[in-house]
Structures are given as C-alpha cells and as structure tokens.
Image (cartoon, rainbow, N blue to C red; front, side, top):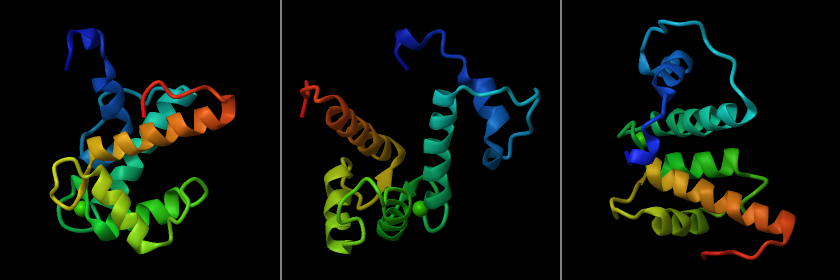
Length: 128
Ligand SMILES: [Ca+2]
C-alpha cells in the first residue's frame, strides 16, 4: 500500500462488517455512508460468486458468467451471450490464468463506472 494510504483505517470497519471472514466483531457495527455501503457491496458480491467453485479468491468462467448475468444485467449489453462474456473475461484476465481475481473484477467495475459517468455527464474520457 502506498504512503498515501497511511491514514487508511478500514481494518476495524471491514472486520466489523464482513462476517464471511469468520472474524468476530470486536466493536459495534458502525453505520456506513452510502459510498462505504457501495464498497461493501462490491466486495461482498465478488466473494458471493467467487466462493461457489474452486479457488475462493477468483471467479472461474461459470462464476464470472453468473455474476455478470445476474448482477450487471442492466448495465452490460450481451451479458447473456456466453461467448461475449468469455471475451470480456479474457480481456480482464491480466494474469492469464483463465479466471478473474478481485483486482481484475474491480478494474471492470471501475471501467463501467467511468463509462456510466461519461454517459451521464458527456465528459470526455481522459484514458481509454
Ligand atoms: Ca472461485
């Protein structure tokens, strides 16, 4: 983690919210802001699908297809087309292991958020 994150204090927050880690909360669950709730949802959705088969820290083709077709059904075109979803998986699979890890998943969500913002605001992309 870079020095810019020296004040990152999510450890207690994360461990109080995410029961799937098996961690016993040591503090009352804090209220989350809308953005914190969105972070939690992005993480929980990944783990919900990633833990269904095989490596619990990555999405295989079946898990990725289930996540995209269920959770991004209104955002991604052709999310029900298995070949197109496999092409999307390949484009995200930076380490070329045939699966999507958390960082690759977050890269997809980041790209989708940027595209949605561009559609909303008409703002030009700084990066493609
Ligand atoms: Ca998995």
